[in-house]
Amino acid sequence: MLQEQTYRPWEGRRAPKWARVWALARTGLSLPLASRWNLGIIGLIYMMVLGWIFILYVMASTDNPPIFVLGNNLYRDWFFNHPMFGFLVMILAATVGAAHISRDLQNNALVTFLSRSIRPIDYLAAKFLTLFLFLLSVTLGPALLLFLGQIAMGQEDLTWKSGLRDLAAILAHSIVIAVPVTSLVLAFSSLTRRPFVAGLLWSLYYLTTWALPGIREISRSGDWWKMVRLQNLTAHVGNWCYEKRPLRLALLRFDSPSEEMPCDPWISLVVLAAVSLLSLAIVRLRLRLPEERT
Amino acid sequence: MTALELRSLAKRYGKTVALDGVSLSIPGGAVGLLGPNGAGKSTLLKILLGFVHPDEGEALVFGTEVRRSASTAREAIGYMPENESFVPGMSAVEFVRLVGRLSGLPAYDSMQRTHMVLDYVGLGEERYRTLETFSTGMKQKVKFATALVHHPRILLLDEPTAGLDPRGRGEMLSLIRDVVRKSGIDVILSSHILPDVEGVCDRIVILDRGRVVADGPIDRLTASPEERWEVQVRGDFGAFSRALVAKGLMPSPIDEGTLDLACPGGTEPILRAAASSGVQLRHLSRARGSLEDLFSRLIPRGDRKSQAISIS
Image 1 (cartoon, rainbow over the protein chains, first blue to last red):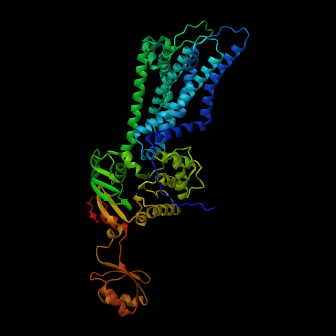
Image 2 (image 1 turned 60 degrees about the horizontal axis):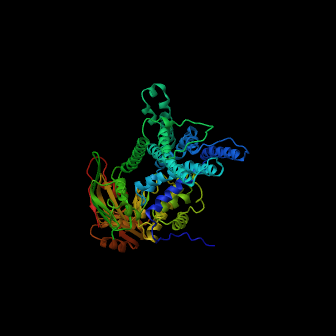
Image 3 (image 1 turned 180 degrees about the vertical axis):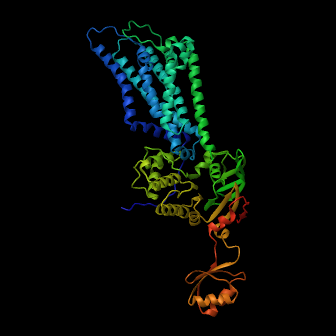
């Protein structure tokens, strides 16, 4: 069989702009899944959830089960607001997200991408979408699994309305976590050409702001220090989304840091929105800089 | 329609003048963009891509003003950057396909054209290998494939043979020549390697310190300012040379049977010398200077101002 290797022209209709943004986002989504390390961290997050589902199953299979009703606390304090979940998301964001823009800067791929019929804002939208969807897959995905487990095996008598309210709250809580983390990580990623340095900067930021409110000398100077911690802010706003239901008995209790926040949840929401917008503004500014270099 | 139209383009970076009122009209074809370092070539390419906005003037790509609608202008452009440009972990197929999608090709067309251009540049066998395992020559070919994937109307090639061995350089130049001749795509070739430009382009633009110092067809720009002729004869070469000297001419032999000489009065004395010495005249043409001669003449070393030539 003869293989034709001559150049052939193309005449066709160009795809809409959103299809270009989606093409870049989809490629970005497939790359991190090639790493065993990333798959391992994702596996750990799902293991957390599967652990809870197993406990729910054991309780549901017992003839005289103890009263074991966590209600929507199960999603809040035992998943989204749990420090272990926060650290796993931080590590994933560092390994996956921090490379997003810095890798394109390091390998000059940004020049090739921006020389096409996309604008820097389209590139930013694609990168945001990539990391946002990736983070949703490790926040909303496991939380939905937990929700299904709770519906199927939980001991709480849920009404349809409460169930749907929980579902909406889970979605909102996931978005509250994913949006600021995505914005911040992209900002760190755009600051350097080295993905490793970007990941390190993000991790240092997260760990420093995590540790600061815990230092006694600092915590004495006022409760406002608690607002420095990203997970406090996301937990505060996230908890705001859930329906308040009295628990019959909670055998397990975990003190959510958000319970002691010194302000109304909407202030935390404003802070998170401001941090996200500022981070995205930094990225936009950094995407201009390579263009202006001679 | 004119491929590129530049009107009084000016760009400064602080006190450094990158472009100083550049006006050009490039109808199409293969055009070489030459100039020493800092001449403004890269700035010009970045303005055409909409990466940099000019301080004054405007640039039009096939009638589209780049500053107003850079995205539309870029649809007509296939850009091959000078430096390596890829995403590690992606195969050649994945990367070229992605760039095709970003250029506006629908998913199916993008995949089909990716395979076609990778075959065309000679990477059909290696298309599924990850890009970081490619040699410099293969990476250059991938960049060329990404520039071609959406069938642009004009290619902006920035040092396409940089870092290539002689074989790779030959292959790349052959591909560019083929695209120019068979596909009807216009080419702007920015290069420091003058023979590359000479071998591919039929027109050049030379920039120096942000200004156009030469613009026109290569053969006319490199034509000798005095009437010099290249003559090839068969027969008694010595007798022919002596006959020329007898007529007051000063022939300089190039090789056996070929010589170069200045003959301001036309070809009549040469023809007579050939007749009197009994040699057969095999070739007689106006001698052409090299692009290197022209470049050295127009871009003098030191601080002397360069002279400008424009031939339309």
